[in-house]
Image 1 (cartoon, each protein chain N blue to C red):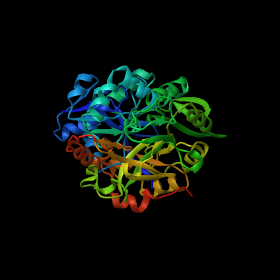
Image 2: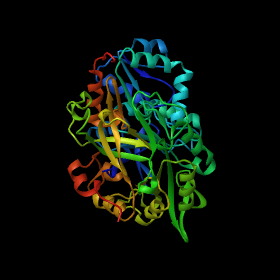
Image 3: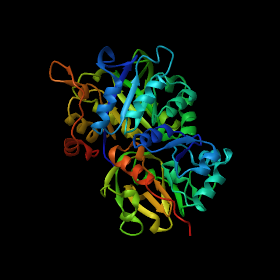
Image 4: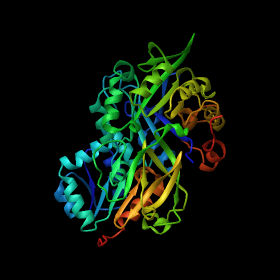
Length: 212
Length: 257
């Protein structure tokens, strides 16, 4: 059973309804006991970084997520804010992130001549180095496909081998990561037509990985 | 590269879709679920759903309808109409809306913008501005175009950007339903005054109009009603959305001149 983690940061129904279309057995839950038995976890979310981390802690979800993801190797997909929460910290706040991806979340600089938020459809390009094209998250998806983004902060990885795709908006930023069983996308697959649905399907087919 | 966004603006009145001319004469177009399905199948970039009778009836958009429409949308959904509290916004996000659009309440209660942005992020707050050209510049109208505010559009847009809005939807009342082109001057004044993405609305009759308002009006996105729902000179109702190849050739890579 796939569990969409409900930590009060919106955007849950869209993910659920798209997974249901794929006939994936999925629930939305804020209950740590559901998270503890999930085969797959999705951490969606829109909103502020600190509020997201605080909400996870208040609901007692941070510890169980930590155990399932880093010890049991359960696949997790972070989307948008949920992706940023996988990093060490964000310029948006002061609270530490989950830190499963060695990365920082930074603010887009309007001085680069870009309008912020980055909102709309942009190309997702697989990285040549690192996990890149070989990541199962991109199965059946062509390089440079368009996905839907809406965000004011972006992720910068310390370890290039975690980066599976990048997108350009003022800077080249990380739009897809994979580190073992931890997956993340800055874009919204649940709002990205066929290509997004394909990515969700790919994720549901990822098996748990023993964590080294 | 970030593409120009092209998407339908769907007006709800009660349970049905309508299309207006200069904000008046609502004409029944069809069923919103059906329209959402078509635009999603045609891979529109987003869908904008505005309930034009909600405000006057002292309510927000119907959450149940929004959730059913959201389930049909494999694209982002923005919902507006009568939203005036954080709780109303929250209910719509829970129903599956990606963004909410605030119009009249942005004038009567500007603090609402910051309050919603603080909880759900700026990217989820669209401030919708209905504008009319007056002597001395463009003026903001609220309550479905019925109420003058004597506020300058540019000053309002700047104040909303500062308050935490993530996007500005600029709607030219006198262009609505005319299909004669967007108000390029209005759009440019707003787009040049804020760092946010600006969505042009009102007047689209061709892909050329869209290209124009991006290149000369500096819009980041364009939305249209009549252009996507009427067909031919007799304005037969036929919901359609341009082919991606045509959009790519004529609109998507347009850049502000």
